[in-house]
Length: 161
Image (cartoon, rainbow, N blue to C red; front, side, top):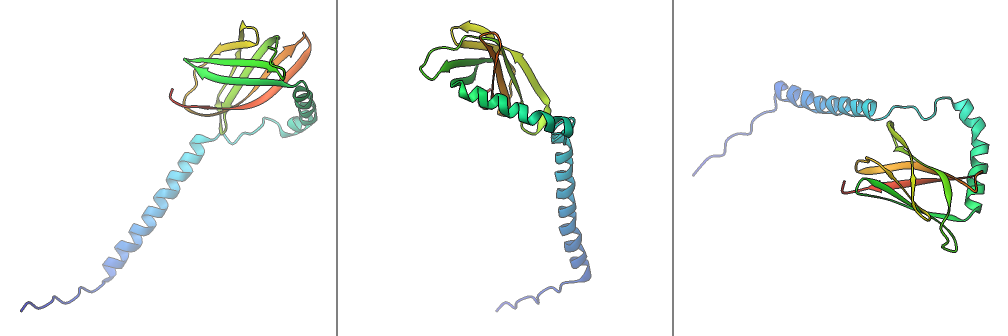
């Protein structure tokens, strides 16, 4: 018959090791999270909030006028080229000038890019772009009939690059 060994007692050294281990993990995770927060977001939303607030109503007016034009857009990335198709509600292609595509990461403005798209065919525009996988926010803009400004915000999700 085998006798059971008496249970080991919990000593002060055991408690100290558990205490230091627990709070060591908490502090390490906090430092890691702080490091990632500082290095992944600039913290800058706009250069000057007062100036941005003054432009807001004008921006809303332009976007409402753009929506009233009834232009649909389709934007996708293929083989390093952004391809943009612009058409009216009836399917007729949009003849636009000065087509601009600007985009940036939602939380990191340091990768912002602004491209000028060239006309590939009727209603089709393209621009070379180097975009890594992930989410990109941006804005399309073009001039219609020489002076009508059309603007449209967009979100592009890039996969498989």
